[in-house]
Image 1 (cartoon, one colour):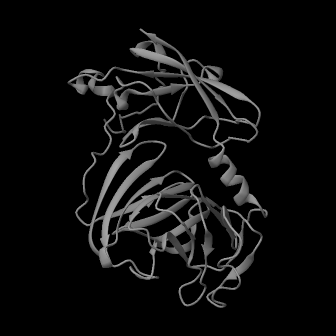
Image 2 (tube, one colour; image 1 turned 135 degrees about the vertical axis):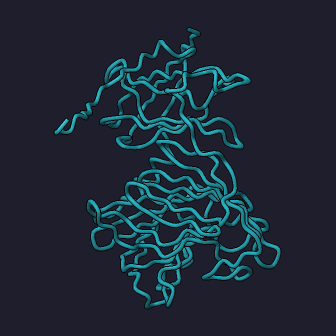
Image 3 (tube, one colour; image 1 turned 180 degrees about the vertical axis):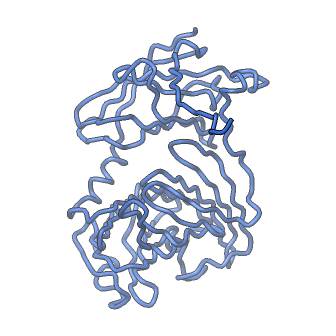
Length: 350
């Protein structure tokens, strides 16, 4: 043959929910908040689920259209995460069909070879280091410290925004996190999020377990620190931005001004937001918070929530490739503190 005799074409293989062994109906109510583009995260009551087999179908969009979905097998149980397609406006509800195969002694028997989904196995990485490449941001996780976080502002263009996110205290170091030992393992990885666990021993008998959940535009950090000291999750900045917190205080992150009236004051603090040149991000706390710590000196910003109790701390960072209007941090917190209402019913064996 004198010419190229190869050809390729794409075909669409439509899934049929009836091909799975079991199914249930899930009704999700947005309540009074817009849920468009927001992942739905919920515990599931079934114990016979093979996590790799789970699919979530949206009958309203077509009987064979599935949403990005995964089941995470976490210490607190099986968690279903999925991302509804299209708009999900406030005060509306949507109905989904969740299907799965039963877990057996040999999971390989559940699906034919061509249909298997294989996720990375959970295990310690040799260098305790991972590179995170999400749609709206990128970062490096190195020995428990999240570094070089950049926000995507245009296709192919990212801006360095946060230099590091770490534990900060007098006992362990205010601006560094020197560790005696550290292990990092991927707990779950799928189309909606990646969950990573870090266990680290610090100076002066302090240790922590952190669980990072990386979504397309959001980053959650859950920390259990023993004993409780300082600030479990503190962000230092690499770009100038205007910061505003839930009690109305504001300042400019630029490496000058130290506390600038931001630290302390009436509490509890619920969120803070930072707006820069073509980017924004919020940080909300879902734990009891006494105050906001802030110290803008040679290490820019130094922003984090101080928890007054020994409970685990949960904070969530949300990133935008645009300058957002004032108050978006309050809305981001409401979406997490007031999640969509979920009702599961109509389980069927097939």
